[in-house]
Length: 272
Image 1: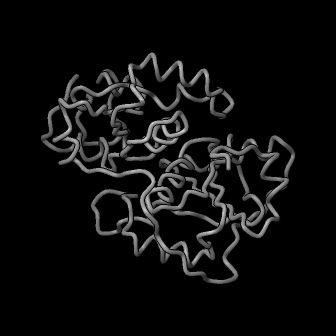
Image 2: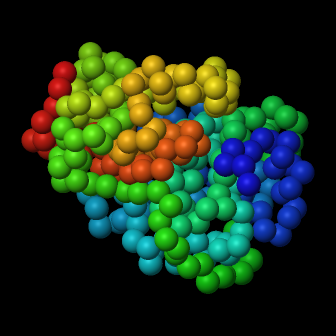
């Protein structure tokens, strides 16, 4: 099973009973009008802000295993199903859906390369509204296939062989560009490495070829054999970095769910 599928592959396989398509679009304020319109046939919405820890002060934090299983069961998804996630940007928030499924032990999950724009540009039709499940299932969580971590754990991992990889644009990493969210300090987690998510994509919203991505990762000083923590602004593009590093063969990956929304608002140490 490929972790990354094309629009042509999805069009050829979309009518299979085990294929479940999820729109995992997450948008910044006032961004909706700029995105591709419509939904791939049969696609349900995976609302990152709703399938989350609703008790947290931060948005779209990982839900409990029970809440996740309940939400996925209500979407009619079985443990045997192959989930295809996409977003209307092209490639932005869909890896967060992939990471969430992987965190709860579901390995049969892939990302549509290029997202909805790629689907439309390939000439495939869309429907105006999302679909809903015709039945409920009994989805069960499995053994985690990728990890999640918190601020205290990140603090304890500083100055160890664990690499902290920051997916934010370089200006925010170096503290030369203000944070888009109010009340956050500028800078980075001390000792972290910069791997902006945008550098891994082509100008038309696809992932670059893996040999090019491998070279970018190497130039960033990342060792795939060592433990890795990915971080970003609020845990969205950190999942994109986790996806890429997983594809390259890294096996010890954790995503810092609070990311800079939590770190930048706290008294945790920073570098600028």
